[in-house]
Length: 528
Picture (spheres, rainbow, N blue to C red):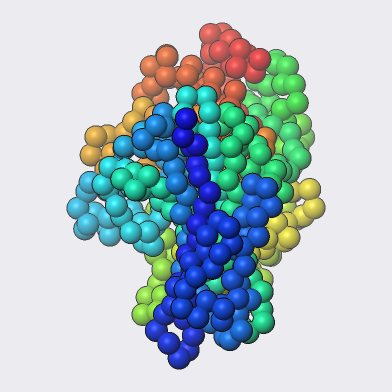
């Protein structure tokens, strides 16, 4: 029987200031060939299942591209899994003969609604041919119960793109090169990857993460309420205090086990970007009052924030145009069409960094929130700049948030490249937003791989379940039991049961005071 994944070979494209490009090829044995390859100082180190391709150039060089090629038994495989870029990007097992379906709407709609911001569409060339799928950070080939996985050994130095080539029978693993010149004598790792053949998918994922030195930060699973799918942005102190009491009263009747009761307020307390200026009419006593009320009822208080974007109608946008990230043409880097439209902040700007740090410290240290749901984080790595590639920018941004928050703060990252979040957050969203129906309107189904869809969210909960408890606790988004949501009884039960079994965050957006005996019984069974 053919091995699901073979041994990798490597290719490095590079140049110096005085030439137009050279190529070095490296065999699995370590044999290096190519014009003037000695100048690049390439070495390949294998340690069991791990491979590290390094360079120590004799002259200053620019690394243009780094790629590994792995023979793959795609024709014999039952399924292929390639992790999607963002936490919202669909990430499920597919046939190796399937194809990526990105957009089926006009380009004018993509531009108007900024549909291409949250995925990889701006920097990965589309290939919709069957057998040419792609993903990021890791992927596996499965033949019945046997799985073989290839994964990056670390995304902090650059993101890793994995492409399928079914006709050639290979997986192509490309690593973001350094965004700066590599000086003579400087040793750098150009690509580190693991090739794991460890039995089941769960075993392979666990082995890969262990080889990376990745473990889930210690925390308790959460159970509770988030305001988003009940009120969206129409929140206020009175309505949140009502929902908070409803949650606390309801949970008193259940054995929660190790789960920590949590009340999380979502978007709507201020303009996006103006985090330290909550709406005084909606919250006359400030946000401290909401956090304090949660603690008085035995609940952990959480709050939503999107620290690396601001909307166009925010005070920050008007007052600090120099804080906004711009491309090489001087144009703003647009990150989405929500609210009044939003753009990326330059996370390398010292004043932006000071502001983000102050926001994190205030929300947690002064206002008393112990859980931060940090959203739209992909904005931090939209555009390589300042001598940093996307992987470095995202790692730096996560570090900035965590180092600035009060000790003991738990994080739930959302809208984040999942590879960058592995082992670096207590909780992480692993699917798109659920909707108030099963799969959205038909005309919305061609709006990208990150679209709102309960059906797709549930598929991602299953698709990324192997990360739960190993890389972080998975946040599968919310379940609904209330009437008025266009899900049938079977769909409601399926969503609740999957969230409870496969994730570490069991949240609803229902007014739990209105649950009847049947709804409470469903919830009780889900708690186990």
